[in-house]
Length: 115
Length: 112
Image (cartoon, rainbow over all chains, first blue to last red; front, side):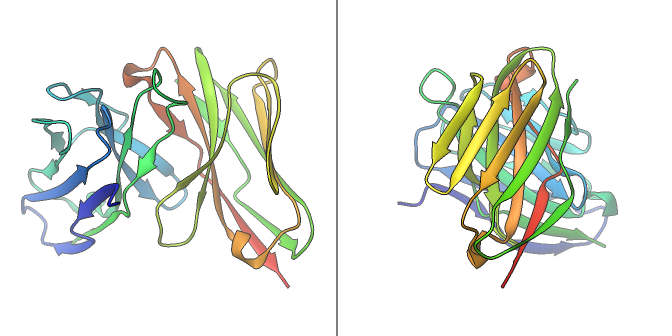
């Protein structure tokens, strides 16, 4: 059982480069999320998707974009990376409140360093 | 918006009990979650409270008072493997996407 898979696990990136973090889940969950985690700031929501074909902005969306072409995949793109985007990125999914408590299932994280 | 406060760090002895408090302010409370996160790993779900009272799951219990905007996570019979960060998160029905907002986390260090 894979659950939710993120790639890459770790990446060092030059400022100004474009980068896509991949996220795939095989649980047929409707909702998917991207969070970033920084020391002292906790997990902050970047973008979310309630269902395939829809996306929405979270707390810290600037500099990031997402797409949700199907149920399983939810990639996060940094169009032009900046050092302040150095962080650990977590993808998460949820079946949705109607099906459960709405708890989140997290991927293992992608550690991104922008130099 | 939401404000979620929890202590930054706590230290306890193996076999003891530790209580991690979480206070929150939200306009449309729709559930409180506790997650455990070991260093370098993903958060994993521990507990969920939506009504007032205590929810018990083995060595872990979580309490909620909606009128006080307060929750705690109680860890009993502490084990070394309980050394981790514990994240309090609140769901707001008025927030877009019914999303969770997380506190900064409490790092618990269990000593022998």
